[in-house]
Image 1 (cartoon, helix red, strand yellow):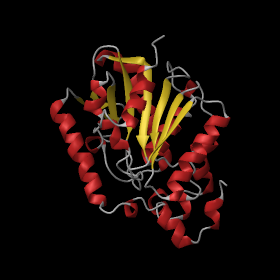
Image 2 (cartoon, rainbow, N blue to C red; image 1 turned 120 degrees about the vertical axis):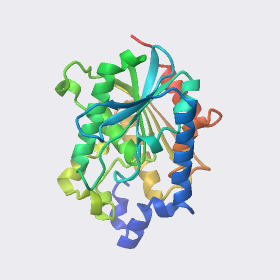
Image 3 (cartoon, helix red, strand yellow; image 1 turned 120 degrees about the horizontal axis):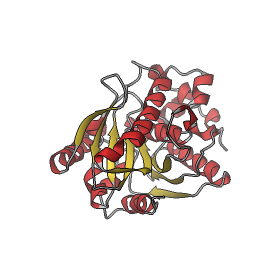
Image 4 (cartoon, rainbow, N blue to C red; image 1 turned 30 degrees about the horizontal axis):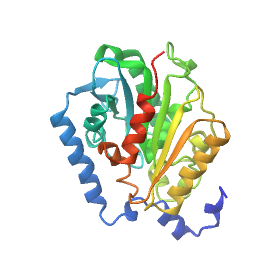
Length: 289
């Protein structure tokens, strides 16, 4: 049941939402992100520091894969308070090998800004990419959004956007998404440690919870999570996938048994892994109108 988390005592709730403690060596996981990302910056063509807004945080690094290529807009994780674009480009080289460009988005971090601000920044980034990526070789009619953990929540919020408030952006601007280990219902999150920096009340948690939202444009979605994650992270993905299925959306669910909360998304950087293959199939299967 969706509300089973309410039956947990506080210690168990904290444990199930403590992503850092769910792996033996958190620092090693983040070091892997940075090492793989550094390899992409060294080995790939990259257009740095594309500004989608006025603040220094509102920047995109774009890894082109050729003229007319589809684009994955990647929103990094870090529980909304850690990491940045230079830590999060680890998939760019492998995706380019599959003919897919990658736009890695920087956004401001909590607690310096609210989650509402972060969501708004990510939506502006998508709108900017739609309006500008063609001049860098990307196909604005084949945009996809991806993210891991907090980034998956942000990606889902982008997918749920009413784009009528953004002049020139079509309602189906995002053709699909690749969402890993996401947090789609923030009500339990606001009852444990992450709310020290998110500072959500019940209303803010509800308006930033993709689980309760509609998804215009009928995007095709890939929902994935690691088999070694905590029960709550698994439940969040499963509940979200069930909701999408019941709403009639096309989706694929992929539990990767030998992966944890942090390394499941790095399978995008390995062409031999199921997640890379499923993501490439989804993105390349979208035919330009």
